[in-house]
Image (cartoon, rainbow, N blue to C red; front, side, top):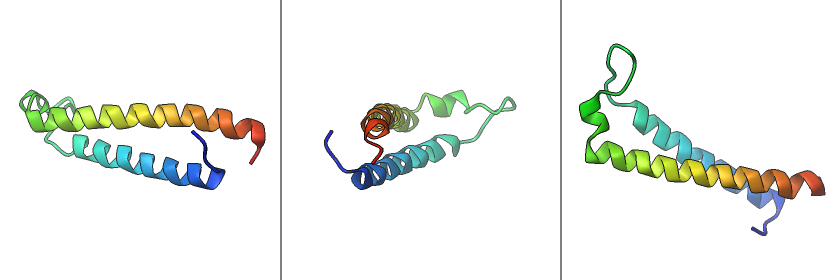
Length: 77
């Protein structure tokens, strides 16, 4: 990746927004007495698609953060 620190900060905000939004969607469904999502909902195609999107976005955020620390720690920019 080749971007300025300002661009990187903006991208980080975008990725965090995506992850946060998907996380909220995953936490919306009804929970059981243990606080876990009901199995019927968890196994639905809609929920699984949101989970897949969340996993992908979270992994992208992790990779970005790894790059961000290396890129801007040394430069101090």
